[in-house]
Amino acid sequence: MVAIPKAPAKSAKVLPAAAKAARGMTGNEYRDLIASYIHHNYASQGLVVYVEISLGKTVIGKDRCIDVFVVRPSDRKAIAIECKYQDSLGTVDEKIPYALQDLDALWVPGCLVYAGKGWSKGVQHSLEASRLAAFCLPDEATLSRSKQTRELDHMLAAIFGFWDLVLPAAKKFKPRG
Image (cartoon, rainbow, N blue to C red):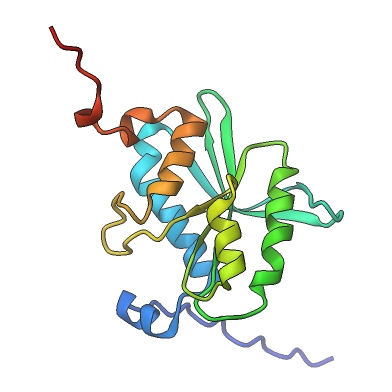
């Protein structure tokens, strides 16, 4: 029997942010951006970020794979994050109600983090209204917290108690007297 050599592994192409923006971001790139953002801003608070984690079954009995799983080992609190990026109209709209229902069925807190301009108006409204969804589009260059990351920051504050990171000190009530 003659052995057939395997094709060499292709190296992943790393594109500058401008090139990604011009062609649109892939789902895996968005997942990695969210994971990088959380690690960059919250690792110092004790959070550990994992990607592509198997976690039980979906509501229709399939094996569930969580895009980003964040855990704080000190108290074992965690959140499962599904990432959806849609820059052009397509079939992902049909998957959103199922994704939200599936997150609601998890045994740990979960949220759907989304971005992009390709959502239908109805799905966009559903995402904006859902307590399980958070818009998040971090700046790839700085990964800093901003208005574009605020919804995810608030979810992380609610799960892990990081209120000091999201509540502005200038808004703290100061009694007269």
